[in-house]
Image (cartoon, rainbow over all chains, first blue to last red; front, side):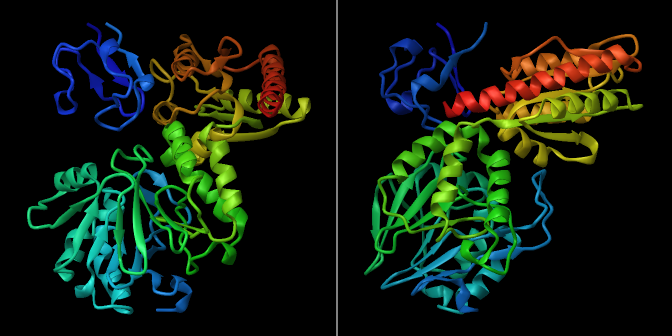
Length: 54
Length: 402
C-alpha cells in the first residue's frame, strides 16, 4: 500500500496506521478513504495528496 | 490614546507599532511592522489577538486607556504564531477572568508553545458565534491561511472582518486606515507580505475568498499593518490575482557572479528583452538584493532567467538559498531558463536548471553557459534568449487575460 503526502502541509498518510482520530482504521488504503476525508493536519481534501515515490 | 484608533464606537486598535523590526524570521521588513490587536467593548469585553511577547505591557497600556484589563471577558486567538500570541500568557495574568477563545487546533498549538494548564479555554468550531451583548463574534476557520489553526473573526453587526494575517502588511505607521495612507505603498507591502508568507497557500486563500464573499464586509482588520475600510475592492482584486500567481508581461533576471562573467550575461539577456519590448524587465544581483524582494518579484513575473556560475562544485550559495526559498513558496506557472559561466564544469548553471525543473517551471532552453568569459557569440545568444523571455512573457500575460 502506497503512502501519500499532503501537497500543502507535508503530512504523510500511512495506510498501515490509518487515521484513527478520524475514524479511519489501520490498514485502509488511501484510495479507500471516504471522499470527505480531509488532511488531519491542515484540513485540505484528498485531491491535495500525491503518492510518495518508493 | 488618540481617537484615530477607533474602528467603530467601542471598537479600538490596541496593538503595537514596531518601527524598527527589519528581520522578521528572515523576511526583510523594510518598513517595520505592526502587531494589531483590537478591543471590542459591549456588555462583554473581548480582545481580539495580542502582540509579540516583548510588547505585552504596551498592549495592556493601550487597553487600559479604554477599560481595566481585569474586565476583559474573552481573548480571541485567531492564530497561534508568536507575533500574535506571544504576549498571551502575560496578558492573561492581567485579565484573570478572561477565557481564551480559539479553535481546537489553536488550543493544541498554544499548548505546545508554553504551559497553558492554568488557562481557561473556550474552544469554538467553524461558524460558531459568541454574543457580547449588542454585538456578536462569529468564528470562521481558514486552515492554511497560513497555519492549520488560522481563523477569522467576523463581527456581523459592524461588518468588520478581523482577518488575522490575511490582507496584512508589514508596514509601521502612526495611522491605522488605508484612506490615510498612499494606496500604492500599502498595496506594495500587501503584495510583499503575500509573496513571502501566503504564496504557498493560494488555493486555500481562494477557498477563503469564496467563503468571505457570502459575508457583508465594510472593514477588513488584519493583524499586521493598515486596516482596509476604503479600498476593499482593490485589495480583494489583488488577492484574486495573487492566489493564482497571475502572470504579467514581466521578466525577472536574477543572478550571482564571481568575476563578472555571469553579470555580463545577465545584462545581455536584459538588453535582448528590452529591445524586444512589451515587457517590464527587472534585474537583481542577488547579493545586492534579498530573498524578500525576489519573492515579490517572481509573484507576477511570467518569465525568469536565473544565473549562477560554478563555485566549488555547484551554484553559488545565495542562489541556492533563493531556490530553496522558491521551492517552499511554490510560485506557479513560470517559464524561463538557467544561465552562468564556468571554468571546467558546468555544475553551477546545470544545478540551477535542475532546480527550475523541480519548481515545475517550463524550461525554454538548455542552460546558457560561458566558458570563463562570455565571448560575442555567447552574448548574442544571451540577447536572443532575452528577447525570447520578453516575447513569452507578453504571450503568457495575454493568454491569461484571454
